[in-house]
Length: 387
Ligand code: COS
Image 1 (cartoon, rainbow, N blue to C red):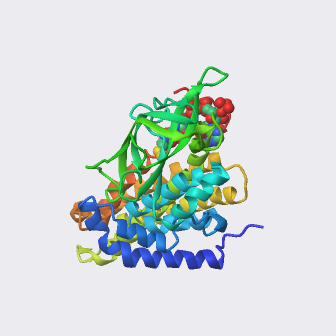
Image 2: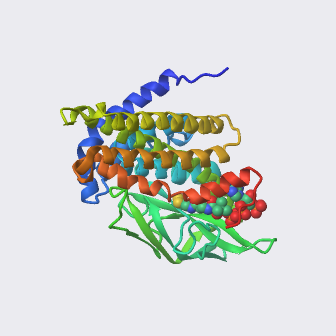
Image 3: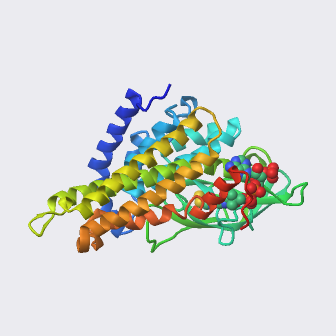
């Protein structure tokens, strides 16, 4: 049986998030972006709405929903503002997800309830100045010292890591040499207030300007052995598996952002007149809008299908890479056309398409560049692309 209907609960959730985004986020999005302000107040409101821990089971303080509900929520936030969507997406799929899926029972009980209430945010400490696409090339090291580990190294471009409510970072570090001679990689849960751990907010970003991005340094950071996430040597796989789920939420950001820009363009095309008629009635613009609507429809089908696979415990890594890649590229084409349709006004900050155009750019870079997605897809096809 093939069924494209969402459940009643999922439709209600979409309406709720849409209303919230219209009422609470839209009025402040432009100013937060312009002033590069991460809003704790707005983050708390999103937490009160239940946007953190949606897919976490109730025993750890989550809402016990399926992943598609979470993806719809990210899509709806992105339709209005990528920065708030990024806070939720990184907080959930990357931060909460790592602890929920790989943490020990004690770690889950210690961290998840506070994270699900949104009291603190968790960040994903993978990327380093010299380990971006080559994510296993971490220079950050952890050395065992009795029943502690001592971490030294640095991370960069880490969402949710430097604000006053950044509570914990899950840090990938090299802990030795594996049997096959490659570096052994493990992850550690490092509380924000651990001595030697500093986080500095990064400014002057082109995109997601109202989200919190940090640069982290670890200088002789001592954490107890119980801080290791799951088992020693499993860190890289934990990170890669988490990114598979994270890529669905980046797909949702592409889809929602494309939807938001398209709606702005459609409205503008109907209101703006030139040569005595509304510009939407010119074939050149009508066809642009038709293409936008078609591509958004295709992006939604692909993303929901990939998420459905995940919800049904099927393999979804290939489809998640495809959805992330496709949705982010659809948003690129849609925002490009949306700015074009707005003409000179599309280049001005007071028109939301200008922000959508900038915010899109991250989606082809973060959580694996478009090139990395093509590597992942090609490998699933049985190919071994040289890179
Ligand atoms: N799920 C589970 N395990 C995975 C996995 C996944 N999605 N992807 C890789 N692995 C495992 C492999 O099975 C392999 O295990 P074994 O050593 O037991 O064989 C191990 O991890 C190493 O995998 P591989 O050799 O494929 O690693 P590469 O260094 O070649 O990695 C890419 C390749 C480029 C795909 C990877 O580094 C990557 O995704 N880079 C982008 C990182 C990224 O998205 N960064 C952005 C973070 S922003 S939040």
